[in-house]
Image (tube, rainbow, N blue to C red; front, side):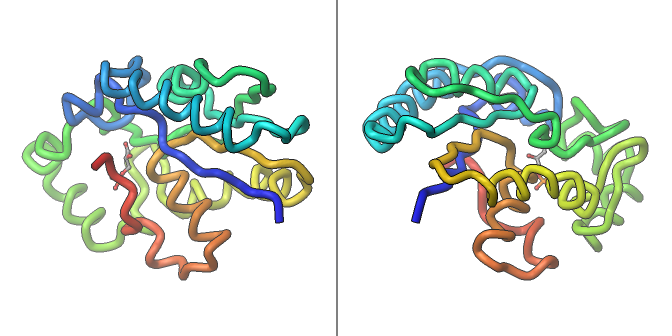
Length: 174
Ligand code: G3H
């Protein structure tokens, strides 16, 4: 069976500051990851002429893909991170302190909770449908470089995990 490789982007400057959303570039550690990933992908997909690299439209995934040579790269808006709406750019601490009711509602139902003027996990799952259809249709390997919430949803689809587990799947930097 042909592989679908899922990876989060390398660490971004906003990740270092603990800020959600945004569109920052990679940290030094993030750049190291991008180079390692390129080596891994180039070796793993050496004889796979038709393979492709899919990213979101955000800088941190595009920059993570950039050292990979020899494969076409495709940007999908549907692979962008969950839209945190009015909370975009905040830390979880700031949300807890300044918007305690929002913080609580999200904690109580992370799957259905929709950020004001943003998205819920259910919204993300829905917008991923065209990506999943295209992934299923591809005959060649695909490397998907995306974001935590989106990757949880994609992984859950392919690993057949229940909906309510999706927001809690482990996907953080180690
Ligand atoms: O910026 C968004 C995070 O990557 C999503 O993580 O849904 O666990 O807050 P979370």
